[in-house]
Image 1 (cartoon, rainbow, N blue to C red):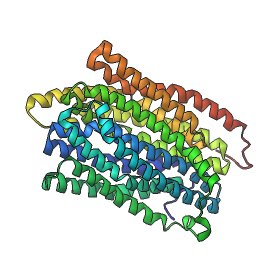
Image 2: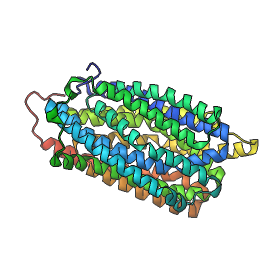
Image 3: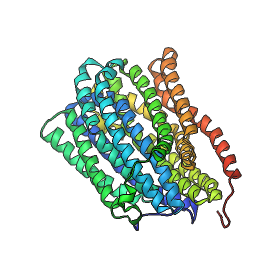
Image 4: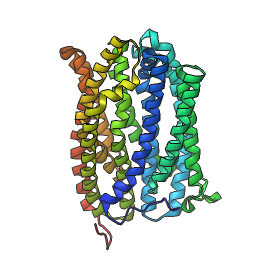
Length: 455
């Protein structure tokens, strides 16, 4: 149990950063193997193959976003019970989360397989990449139960302050994924779908890795009394998880509308956007890590009744996140072109045309990173407090801004207009989150902190 961390005492900024750091490194490895997927597919199979993968991005992200929304929502209650030092209730929450996650996995697999082809058609996916896009997406969707299991186990560990085990799991999974990519795509020539199969297998290994650790944690050792499904617990868990899943689903629908617009600009433009979007994960990885850290920190301190620490932790996390975003902005603006070249192959004219579009998009996203980092820290703090409805409203605002920009700006600016949809979406969410945090902060002040609560 040495990796479990209680965040209800100690320096907030140091705790949040030390918890986020292994998550950040884990995200780096996750992005590394995602990038490796794209690199191997792009270099071995060409621009059309990378465009096929790109055509599925938002569909796949929608499923992953919903899974992360549910499992992260469930982990908020786990963090609160851990902070309150209620081990029996913690186990009770964990078991009911497991039952719900299994049901969610079945529903999502059926939903994904039924809607795969119709959605690709609605999105105006180019005929030249349609077959590869369908096979890639179906393979990912068959593996969704594995994705659910890994995300639930990782979320449970994070709720107890353990960010190191998910890191180790992701390092291991990254090595497996890249090895299988090289074997399936490059060595055996199995095509685009084999890259998706490699990702699913890698996540299976990551999930097993996390499960082994969970079984060793004393506070999570289950007895027969813990193995019961209770309606009121499921209702509360869904009350936390559903708004977060819905928020991610709405955001992804907005992304699919953007995808529809992009698909109409041709294969080269689609390939350029795919290359830049694969780096989007690297741009965002520190932000999501600070977000996970802030959710755990706020949840544990709410459970412990240490209300004053939440506001100080939020301020510290915001400063750390904004400094990090500026450093990543400088890196991507300086080295972005060199990195993007690793994704693109073909004749020199096609490469240069694709690279110009990709770097222009990357530059605009990089310049807006402080807006994105504010979004993640603020949204996650509010969620950790236990309010998942206001962040859902911010997701709706993000959807409106993203889709509005994607549909309207190209009418006046042509292709150039689509480059600004993402940053404007972040800004739209931030406006809602700014006022949401003020509201939640006032509510926190009204809560009576127990004697001895210090910051």
